[in-house]
Length: 90
Image 1 (cartoon, helix red, strand yellow):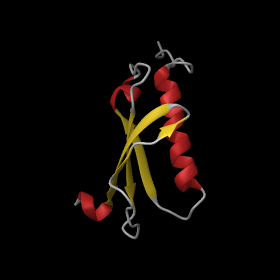
Image 2 (cartoon, rainbow, N blue to C red):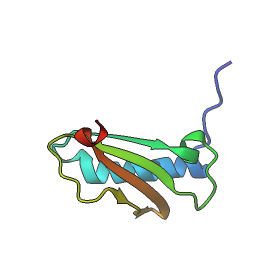
Image 3 (cartoon, helix red, strand yellow):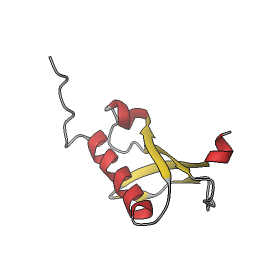
Image 4 (cartoon, rainbow, N blue to C red):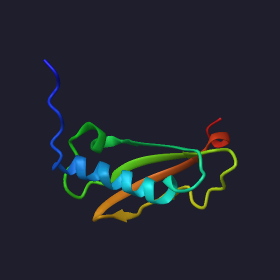
């Protein structure tokens, strides 16, 4: 039997969309190489209202980081985004 798809109206689904919007607005229309992913309760599907969406963005070698962490509010959803560069991961 196939797994039940997540409820698109759940807080976890709404938080996933907020993180995707953040990434798209900041990076999609620019010539940048990045990797972005989510973790924590949002990915597990058990985030509760008010939980932040924990994200990580890895920038290419040529990118300069403006911050190592941002905590923006997107569509009322708090995000906690950590930034790394590829050399910084080594």
